[in-house]
Amino acid sequence: MPTLVTRSSMPALDEYIEEIRSIWDTHWLTNMGTKHNELTEELQKYLGVPCVSLVVNGHMALENAIRALKLEGEIITTPFTFASTTHAIVRTGLTPVFCDIDPSDYTMDVSGIEALITDKTSAIMPVHVYGNICNVEEIQSIADRHGLKVIYDAAHAFGETLDGVGIGNFGDISCFSFHATKVFHTIEGGAAVFKDKSLADTLHYLRDFGILDEERIVETGGNAKMNEFCAAMGLCNLRHLDAEILKRKAVYERYTERLEGVKGLRLNKIRPEVKSNYAYFPIVVDTQFAKTRDEIQKLLAENGIYSRKYFYPLTSEFDCYRDKYNSNLTPVALDVSHKVLTLPMFADLALEEVDRICDIILQT
Ligand code: T4K
Image 1 (cartoon, rainbow, N blue to C red):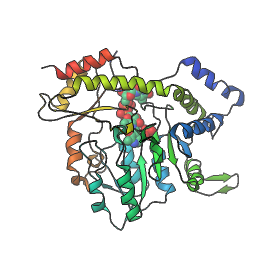
Image 2: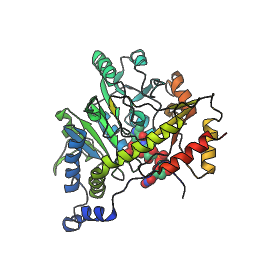
Image 3: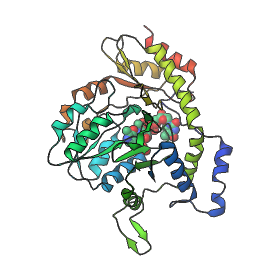
Image 4: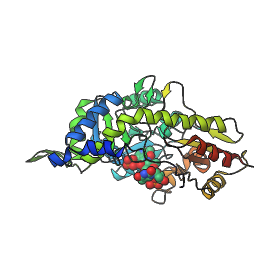
């Protein structure tokens, strides 16, 4: 069987069946049912945040966050991310302005933000890429100085903490993805998480056609509701999450043991103040290494191991965006995107398989 870049964690079949059994009594399948509401409460506790708006996927969490904050004009963001971050800005009618990344952790380089602020800027949308937590203090202080909102794309950072504070507590809204490929998943799903309770109604209406009651529609909402089967999967997965993260940690440590200090390979560093979820294992292959990033990917594939170039190309280089925005101003992001490879990472990845992957990478 091939080893893919990740593999969805799943609860025991019996556990899931038990979780969905009551749905056959109620016939209540979607539209904020019991499972949805239970998961909302469980997530508030797990994440240590007051407000959670569950949605159908992480992308809709981002779009709804932009709409809820009534943003206009330009949003300063990173091109070193999945398509969703930039698409959310463009699809809601705003303009992305790309900021370069920090070569040490690939998050937004905060020293470049202020030069990009114009009178059209309404927000900053950084990404906790690979679960690396952005420089949240500095981003907030820039936002405060210039009257900007902050939306974090926290798709990779579920459950992490910074100095003991849950990751969902930073910025105005943090958006999580609960896609099947994520550390915590609901098959498809996501959430917008926030502290300001006055945003709760708007975020609710945005996911449900703006329906206040049978006769009143108060917002131009779409349909982004999480259904009961997805919520049930989330309830099951949440019970096992801490154990799954521990298994990921062992995989992470084995990779680090084998690859740390190898000339030409840069590994991801977890800051000591961060409790990580070990979502990804990216390596950056510099020219001092004997093989290129693409050669490593090909060699692994010839051995049935499928790594991914998350995130190449930069979103600013996509066919639909090239030359449209300030895409040539992010040289560090461009360089990293040409050298990065994310290696297989999931809870059930055997340590012997990690060794085999490292042997292939290191073979001369
Ligand atoms: N912001 C950021 C920074 C993101 O990374 C993402 C999503 C979002 C926003 C948007 O969140 P969502 O709207 O998706 O909730 C995958 C995921 O589809 C996507 O959720 C994720 N980021 C992105 C980084 O990766 P693909 O196109 O690479 O996925 P795919 O289908 O090639 O799957 C990768 C591997 O995962 C497969 O080789 C095997 C494994 N897999 C996949 C699926 C679908 C499973 O084990 N089970 C599965 O059901 O995008």
